[in-house]
Picture 1 (cartoon, helix red, strand yellow):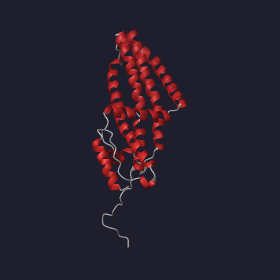
Picture 2: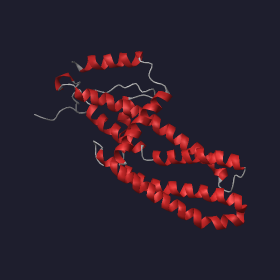
Picture 3: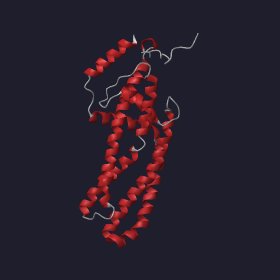
Length: 243
């Protein structure tokens, strides 16, 4: 299979493919991120995360409750102390989870060295567009397979904290609406909700494109060596100096 013919066929296929919408890409990315997080955060690690979060949250809520009584009154103090305890528990639990996820990125080292993953963004951007249409350049499947996995792993680092904040906000908002007491910290809930939702959306879109790119690169590498596209030879800029 010639390189020129294969590249032309893929270009025609990409032109005919309308691509995927943002919702579909986000769903694909969420599945890829969830699969990676489930692989890294095993059951013992989840138990440690929950234990650390509960201990920190309960301790802070008990310590801050007397102070909030003088500021918000008895009713507002209970809600504010509970909310602050939830935030502290989330932060304390997310710290070890994020550390484990950061360390797990090393499972997919960059092909070109130990530099940050974004330095090979040019290769990935050229291989997949904003609608998830993949066009692999000949001879780049191995690099793309590694770099796309690294980007998915990097996108998963901030997801546990964002998900936890969204869940806390969804629980806290109805509680404050029913009680009629927003408390000192209740006014920050919409801000945290918007920030967390935007983080999940952007990370899911990025991971969705990388998941499609990863699958395409894996399919290319699964072909026999004789059927894979080969990169054309690179000509020296000033000609060959070999005799």
